[in-house]
Image 1 (cartoon, rainbow, N blue to C red):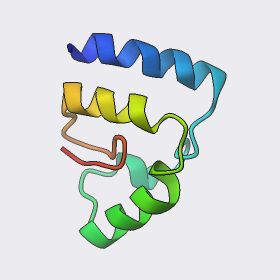
Image 2 (cartoon, rainbow, N blue to C red):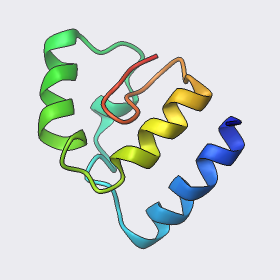
Image 3 (cartoon, rainbow, N blue to C red):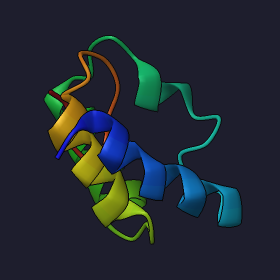
Length: 73
């Protein structure tokens, strides 16, 4: 799947429901230490209703910064 194709469903879902990571600068940091990543993954990403779409986009785009679906790339 292309990054663009993976982004479209995520974009539409975000229009309907604001993800809990919105506005949290820890999700857009250049580097995230493993303990913090694990904490954010379990407390914010795992219960997020957009997790599957966010992770699909991350897997397709492999962004160099940020946390996508509980992962860094």
